[in-house]
Image 1 (spheres, rainbow, N blue to C red):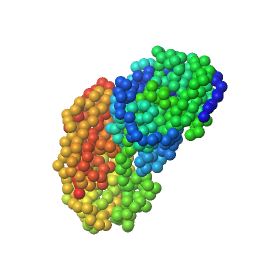
Image 2 (cartoon, rainbow, N blue to C red; image 1 turned 90 degrees about the horizontal axis):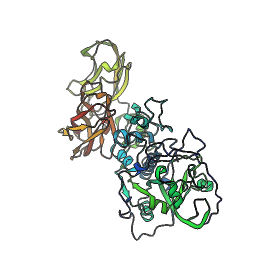
Image 3 (cartoon, helix red, strand yellow; image 1 turned 30 degrees about the vertical axis):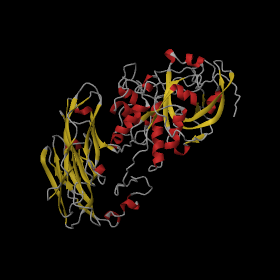
Image 4 (tube, helix red, strand yellow; image 1 turned 45 degrees about the vertical axis):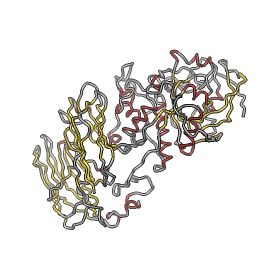
Length: 618
């Protein structure tokens, strides 16, 4: 296959990030694309093997006959644009993650938040805090340790924060939040996170990259040096070719291009390899844009993050895709990969959400067939007698519901309707006559008005339903008052044996004490060796800190979901409390559990003095 294409100067709307990554992006202040700023490529190589892993073993079977053409288009999500931000490897890593989730098959339309990954890599992981930069290794480390949320929870913003967003977001000494576009909304911090296995560098030779793609049926993230003429970029001092750009052809750089792209102009880019074509052959050009008579043969198919408006618009695999020569990749880029996720998303049978992504929700899902609530309405018990809540009185009030019918509880939901002018004053507990207790609310919510909410209560699961249930409400500060307007319980019982009597385990101690880095994070692990179905779980946390408002505390399991326990503590000396963690009910207890404490600002320090995992299993 031969192409004879005319050369002319090309003004593409592609740019290089202002700081940090060396990722090409659009510059909104310069839409013509004729003069784009550049950035340092060093971030892309940080932590990589000195020889770019060329001495690493070649992936795949040595004697395998590889096909001449191959692609992984069936596991690609739509091409997206990084806009004017230097986030090319964030987009490439997110694209890899979405491909791996599609290959695993549980989630039909994965769409993960690049905005959240940028924040997690910088704030939770602490990498590259003083620039927009990152690289695939650090991105995968953040995904593995902390996880990311879905795009709908925190959508990507295409422009990096400037002074119109915050006066501090200017100059070379900007706070990290300028590069992350602020902090995630509370809904993102509370949302389910998705993880990947730990990643690894691989040999970037053509044989190795092909072997990996064929043997695993998964793509590869590559990143490294950027050459202007090779990419037909608008800031090239050499002639570029618009037809090459339309097809997405990226040839190995000639000597003139290497010289033009060196020194102060050195930059980089990252993207996702998703296939190849051994037979694709494109004429090479010199620094003047003239064909040299040589052919560049053999190209990887790649998914870029420059949108679909200009680059690769004529590529047969769709706008935004390109072809990059084997030689370019092998001589100038690094390669990073991960594996298929272990997706465990059980259906919750009473939340109105298709948790396991199989198209069926709650009682319509076969996983809920044995739930009593899916066979009959169960009990709904109410007490609508209004009761004033005494101001600044820890003894509070108690409102009672009697449950006469016995049977083993499989689920319990408590709906509360409280009018109050400062809900952060309130503690709300559900107490049964036999001493079983659940804390529904403990002085959270700050200055918000009213507490109208339904709580899923797991502490009573597996116990007998009959008894006297008291909703205890107390006010712990002055000046604000309120009323308990009423409350109700929706209780379901097991239709068959629940699988054994719940048994509390001995608490498991996490690794401590550990210093909490200023404007950084620390993770402590606790191992549970004996399995069993979790019926209740809580985490007891003991932290000292000079300004706890800066803290975020997260809890999860290795390779699984992670959830926020606390953000912006109002305590004066740290965090000293027990958190209920119902999200893991029904899962096996065995595994490695992680507590992560994130300090979100500089100037104050603290210590994770200790933490304990309390588990009840059957």
